Image (cartoon, rainbow over all chains, first blue to last red; front, side):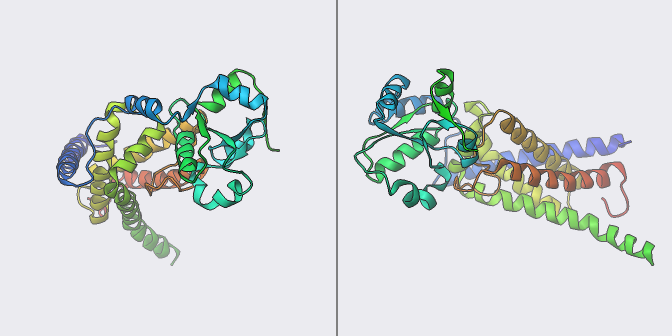
Length: 164
Length: 151
C-alpha cells in the first residue's frame, strides 16, 4: 500500500515539474527564431492550401475517368506494408517516407508527360499532397493528389488489388 | 555466493534502470526541442489531439520529457519523475495501439522529427513496451517497496 504522505509528495512534485516545463516551453518559444504559434488552425490552412494549391487536388470523379481511360498513373504514398495489404489496381508503391531512396527506382520508367495521381488514406492524410508537391518540384507537372484516396476508392467499390 | 550475486545485481539494477530511462527521455526530447514545427506536424499526423492543442503540446511536451529525463538521471524528485515517465510511456503506448487498430501508420516521431524514419509501428510498440517495463519496475521500487536505495 502506498503511503498517503508519498502520494501527496508525488503530486506536489508532478505539479511543480509540469509548471516548470510549462514556463520553460512558453518562454523558450517566445524568444527562439523558429517559434511556432501557440494555437494554429490547421484544417483552415489545409483548405486554403487546397484552394490555392495550383489545382493540385483531383476529385474522385475525375480520377475515375482517368483510371477507366488508363490515362493516369496512380501512386500510393503510404508505407509499403499498407500498399501490400491493398491498393488501387495497377497503382505503384512510392512511400513518401522513402522518396529520396526510391525516387530513381520508382520514377525512372515514368515520363514527365504522364498524368500522375497520388493518394494515401484518411481525410487529413498529407502524404499524398506532400508527395504530389515533391513530384511537381522534380518536373512532373501533371501530378495531382486524390484526397483520402484509398478510403473513397474502396467506398465506391472501384478495382483494387493486393500483393500476396 | 549465489545470494551475493543476486544482491549485487539488484544493487545495480535500480540505478541502472533509472539512468537508462533518464537517457531515453533526454534523447527523445532533443530533436523535438530543436524542431518544434516538425514535431507539431508529427503530433498532427497522429490525429488524436484537437487542433488547438497540437502546437501547445509540441512546445510543452519536449520540455516535460527533458525535465523528467534529467530528474531520473540525477535521482532527484524520483516519485514525481517516475510517475510522469510512467504516464507518458503508457499514454504513448495507447496512442500507438489505437492508431495501429484503426490502420493509421504514420511516422512515429519518437526519437526524431524526420518523417523519413520508416514507420514500422510494431517496432515502436515493442520498444515502448520495453520502456514501460523499466518504468514500471522503477514505479514498484519507488512506490510499492521502497528500500534504502529509493529516496
